[in-house]
Length: 223
Image 1 (cartoon, rainbow, N blue to C red):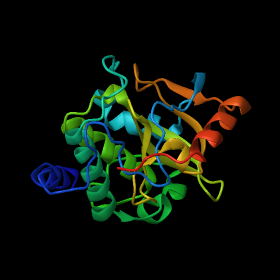
Image 2 (cartoon, rainbow, N blue to C red):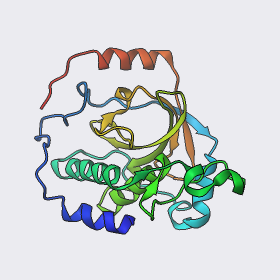
Image 3 (cartoon, rainbow, N blue to C red):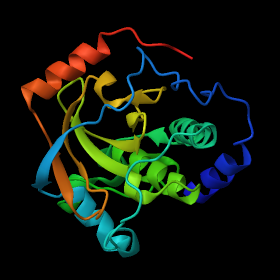
Image 4 (cartoon, rainbow, N blue to C red):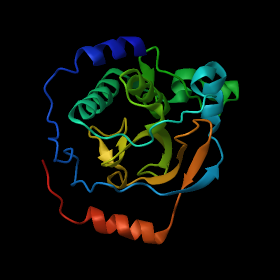
């Protein structure tokens, strides 16, 4: 299924979208403050879902990424980001792991995999978006699977793309690509840019949160 979506994605990148000019910020909800990144502390525990995923996809898990860890957001790669986020959200039907795979009967706490049958939960959306972005030319070292607490204080997986305009979030529960602090989520941990098997915790430094709050309340120029 993800191969079908990949082909559709690459074939439709020529579709006209509202894109940033060379000196304009992407059109994101609530304004956009460049160069604001989600602070991290150090290594933390690896999600059980990632361990399960890696048993079937060894080649995607045990190879250090290295390379670029911050992408310069151009008109073309912004278009690719939007297109892949939209197509995955539109083409994958949401379903819980329990309804989909009956994981409790199998003694599995959390199941991460590609939505090859066209159905999946947040984990599957995020994995597919990362895979398609890499196939479209984005470096894996700038794409982080990221664990958050959502608006209901429940665990949720999103994809974070680190760019020179800040950390952008691709989310199956949101139609727009947002800067991380615009989501309203509590950020817990993400993959390291240098090694996808290493996960790092986000900082809960109050000073950082105050800075972000101040930035997000400051009017910014829209394209």
